Length: 541
Image 1 (cartoon, rainbow, N blue to C red):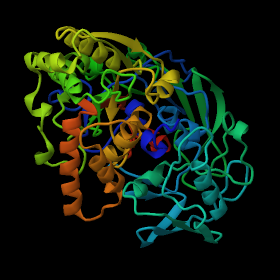
Image 2 (image 1 turned 45 degrees about the horizontal axis):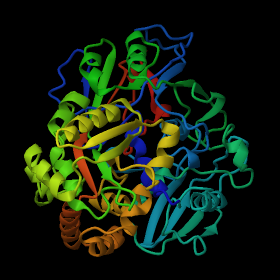
Image 3 (image 1 turned 180 degrees about the vertical axis):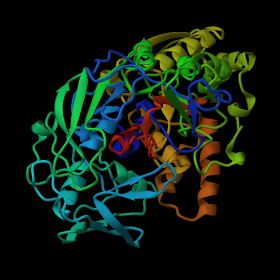
Image 4 (image 1 turned 45 degrees about the vertical axis):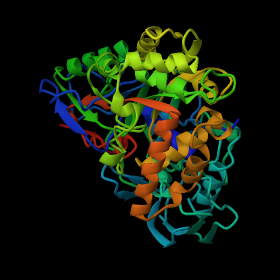
């Protein structure tokens, strides 16, 4: 079953440790946070103590950085790590062509220049003198191979669906011509997520445990669901990192991660919502709070197996019955805002006129919800609600369960583990509603609507009836290739109106994210997708 665009799934920085971009700020421990509009949450677990770590001690001789990670899919192959935060760590082993900083600027890595000959034809100039960890030289053939693999991964969708692999070619050893079938507004940023493999030596099985990249570090130890250790490698093309060793400990429990920060066992970790204010009081830690243009959302299954099949009134009943302010206050400790449209208002092209339409303008109204439940046949029904098992998602599910009970709907909650989540959430035969999220790597409404309408619930929105479906699919199909701002704005307005009326999903709250790092670290500047350049960090003397 087709799941979702992989380039889009790297959204799944929703589940990574860090974030950046609009609305970010840094709060040294002990200083006021300035309110509850900027912060985050996700995972936590068991950490291993590094012999070189002494709580609260930073010295010039320290050679290890300890980082808490929340999830591990069981492979070190970036092509199959989408949505799991060890993917960020693998950026230290593999390089990409270019990165994007928090302001949207390109940072040249394996590429040194990009010439857009025309919107669908790019000429990429590559860095010379680069070698992989095994000594093989980096050339245009490696870029073409990495593009091919990105679009031909077993059991996974294409990374760049409109890429024309047949026409893309090497113009010379260090110049690649990349050709697309159509203009795609997200690809310039999306290429910062394309990890480059060695075409000559690549082996599918070896890549899962002993990767070979051009990055500044190499893997020295990896134990699934325990830890990943990296060490600076000889022969790196760029500036040698200041910190010799990186230790990533898998920590899936919130309390253990906070304890590890408090005791100094880890230097960097995400901070769960309920502990943000506490961590801000800890000495020697700096808390970074950001708005990642992401909303927690409830997705309705429109398939015939669900009570929500061809039943927008039932979907509206659920939306009106949910106390979204309570979700912001309880599940996110006030570090979230009630959603005002189907996707987060912090997307770069959101406009005021898109907000507060339909149920988003009405808000929590149990009485009206009961009326919709009665006329839609939802009352006295039993529905299955799934979530990905993270602490905030479980609390959101429980609050929704209590709200729907008030209008006569029984909700059975199933808390899934990360390993099974992606398999089930894209299968429209296994549930009625799912607590998930909306986001897009490009932080645009275009990519949000295109991806979630076309691909979520296993593409069920493209196969089943709903009001305005044909027109919405037509608009969603072309929105990513529209370059005229005024035309794009009008498409956004129509798509927002159609989605609000059909209620394919209901955005609950716009989320924020928080991470804490040891104040003795210099160079902590997260990139666009929440990635942290660990190679750019150093310990203060």
